Length: 96
Image 1 (tube, rainbow, N blue to C red):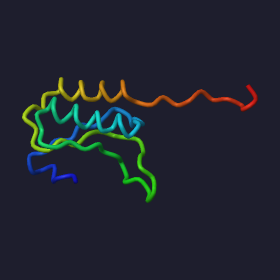
Image 2 (image 1 turned 90 degrees about the horizontal axis):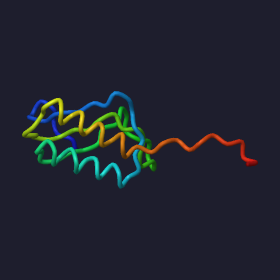
Image 3 (image 1 turned 180 degrees about the horizontal axis):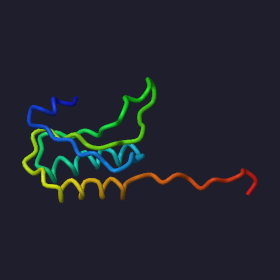
Image 4 (image 1 turned 30 degrees about the horizontal axis):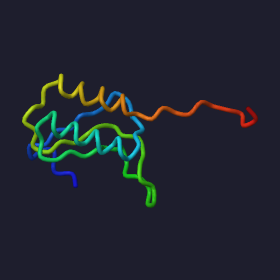
């Protein structure tokens, strides 16, 4: 559950939305929480996914009560997310 960003929380926004598998999303949340010394972290989406749909592109990470909010840490979190991102499968016509 996201807490109020004005209550000591911090949001890291990515330069562009990223698609992550569920396990990679958990790894990203853990990485951000530990790196920023937060109490909790949760992946952010522009909009909640529709019912029955587990994912959607991530636009950042929300970290509750972080001890470290340096820009370098934010860049590290985004770089980690990019390394975990799912690349789109190559476009194929179906008969190859």
